[in-house]
Each structure stands twice: as structure tokens, then as C-alpha cells.
Length: 167
Image (cartoon, rainbow, N blue to C red; front, side, top):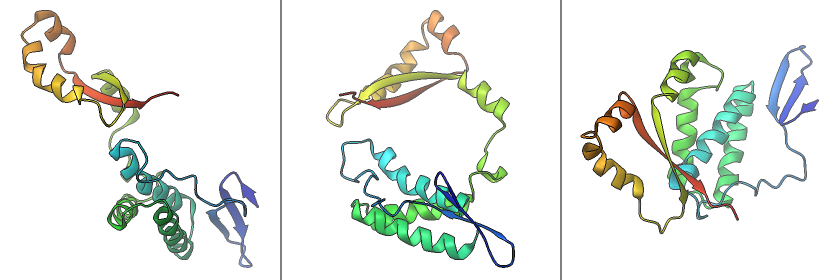
């Protein structure tokens, strides 16, 4: 019986098996094309995140291998390079299911404390734009000479986010 994107089956041995569920009408062409106008890190993380989803949901090694092979085919149709697909899938296999402790690098409390130490720098993503964040890194030393800035910036780090332009 399917629930959202998970198919739950009960075998003849009364064991529960989980698999990825997709409707027969799903053509898997909704994955982002590798040559689309998106930041490179976004496109490179898609194989990793899709593979992580498969690794987390599937409950048997046989199903996992089958779904990961299918994922390679879907990503190939979206022009992902072989090396990028393989790297993302290998990285996901090494990290294991999303719900394991090995996937968590720090506790929730530490994580929320670290959020207060980040100064976000958000810009609209366009590949032809000058990388202003690199410029900010260059002038960072001069900013530390300011007493006000030093008080604010103490034990914080500058982090960049490029948001896609809303049309």
C-alpha cells in the first residue's frame, strides 16, 4: 500500500518491505537539467539528495541497488555527467540513511547556537554577475578595524546565499 512516495509491502514471511513509490504516469523528467541556470552546488547536490532518499526509504539491498540504477538513468536523461552522478550516489552510500546518528555532525542545541554565529549575505543568483561575496571576504580585514563591526562580528562568520530571481 503506497503512502506519499513510500510503498509498504508485507511479504509471505510477514516481513515489512519499504520501496520508493511513484505513479505509473511519473516520467521523472521533473529533475533539474544539469545545464539549467542554477548554481553549480545545487546541481551537484541533486544526485546526492535523491540517492539519500532512496537509501533511507528502501529496506532491502536488492531494491536499493535497483532504485539507484534507475536514478542513474533518470539523471542521464537530464544530462548529468557520469562522474557527478557516481560521486553523489557514492557519497550518499557512505553517509547512509538520513535518520542515522552518523549523518548528524552536531546536536540540535549546538546547531541552533551556531546559527546565531552566522552573518547571512543574500544576493540574487545570476551567473553573469560579479561575485560580491569574494569582494566582502577581501575587505573583511578592514572591517575588523572598526570597533562597532568588531563587537558585532565577534565569533561570527560571513555566509553567502544566492537566491534565484523570482519571475
